[in-house]
Length: 418
Ligand code: AMP
Image 1 (cartoon, rainbow, N blue to C red):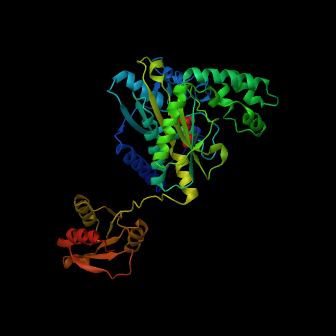
Image 2: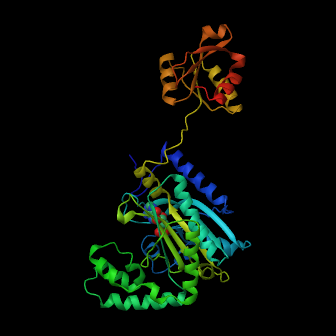
């Protein structure tokens, strides 16, 4: 017997409906702000992703890459920012290009709660605008989205990684500091060799005091970087969005500069408490062969958002049960005709199959959680009627002329009577 591969999951109902609903809420929030959906392929040339940073684990250790039958070295996307930038270079849409996306990403990580090898993200990316008001808009849309899900315990942390030169000076100073520090964990020493910034992400206790004492980027901000960041913070205050400055917040990819931010879940274990994050990544389009182009965006984990919703007891799965369930003990043709008529009239309808007994069909009707059962029996048919039985109330069942059935149901459902 086969099972899903480690770190991969089937999403069954009712969770699948909740999943779709989450995507719908996200689309509403961002489309109301002028973002349009982009659907990049799941698979790209490996180079698209190696451009996002040779020194990130996502690229060096976790990629699902392989050589295809045409000898192309390709990879399943580990994230979608690089794909969106590749699409920008390929199609050169007019700017500002405000996009949103949803879909699966693949990372060969150690699976645990909130960490999977196939996971979904919803996200936005905007190319071609350097205005700090856009940073505020992007952050505010993420904030709104979590609010719309009903989450109350999400924290927003923000930082600025400065201009590329500020960042370079900081990385060098941080590297010096960490190399001189006593007691850094072995894993962090390995990270230090390739990407000192990433050491700040270490959750290992042993590293905590060293990280706490390390220099912060704030000492390296140029005037321009400070000004941009001040404007972002002022905008967030204007919108009454609470945030915390977190000067040790870094993002993995090499192209991040200036604003970076993260939404942190209040209920999740600290190793998996990042619900989502983003920032400016000016430079990525250029690295993919395009002109210098400002970029900013975020990606929010779908699984973690839903775990946070479970923890807070919000955002239940929507009711996807049908409105009507047809029970037919007269051979089944009536069920076929009635369900077809109802569906054509905009009423969702299901039925029992295989000419089961009345009892078995009624049981199926109850299980379907429909609002009404329509019961078709030979005796009633002789009189030209079917029986309409409310399933969610104690209201009595009643005969309805077969010819009036669809109109009667439409009316009852519209009136909200059950
Ligand atoms: P990143 O693209 O690494 O910045 O991740 C953005 C968000 O995607 C994270 O905050 C998580 O919510 C989610 N995420 C990243 N990796 C995984 C994973 N392996 N499993 C589940 N969610 C993930």
